[in-house]
Image (cartoon, rainbow, N blue to C red; front, side, top):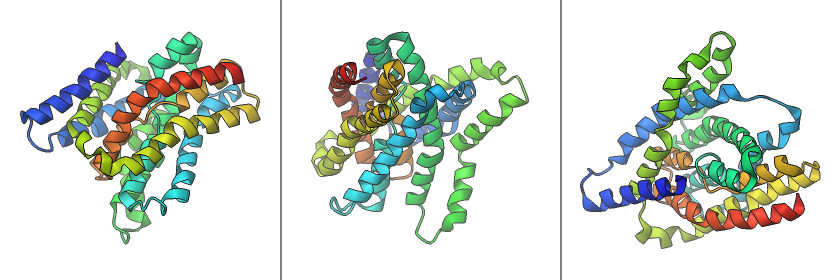
Length: 300
């Protein structure tokens, strides 16, 4: 059912854009809802549910490791690929953050069952934290002028809705029965994926993919192949085997996060590349995750 929804939302965006029914830049209104309403609701709903345990160090560390690997990769290849500041940031945000929930949950459950799904939920919640902190900081830094100053950037980060929600999700449950809001937050959070996919569909221009092919190939090669390889090496190095290691590596192999492309688009960080990273990545990840499952059965 998830894959039907993915196809339906993406195709609906493509068709409505091509038909001219919606006005130009109508995706910006949808993006505003996603960034200011739906994403904070997701953070407030799921982050308080994290149960910290030393045995879960790999799924907790996985999103940070994937982000760090993307940062190092871009440092090595930015000059070779002649990446401008906006494209560099777009690749970091999309290649550094995985679609650990909407794509990750059904695939992980299909391959590893309910035990794997529990590990996937932890990976997803930490991915939300990474998006709300490093992702937002990267977008704001790339979109500000060089002389805007660190004070301006930090001020923008702390006022960003998802970051405010992240901080609130850590603090408020200690002082109040925050779970009373869960029915409302659940309904708001449920709008995130279909609207994000629809927004991506509105902006896809497959006719222009050749122009972005070098950067697209770099980003997807990292996200679908190298990033899970890094997490696999960490699992082997620290002897994290069984379902915890397998599900953590598998979640690292997911396509780029849909919301990361929305964030990049909102700050004009090469929107065409950002949306191609998501749309092409989702299609390719169906095959690459199957390959990773076979590898994990042997190695972990």
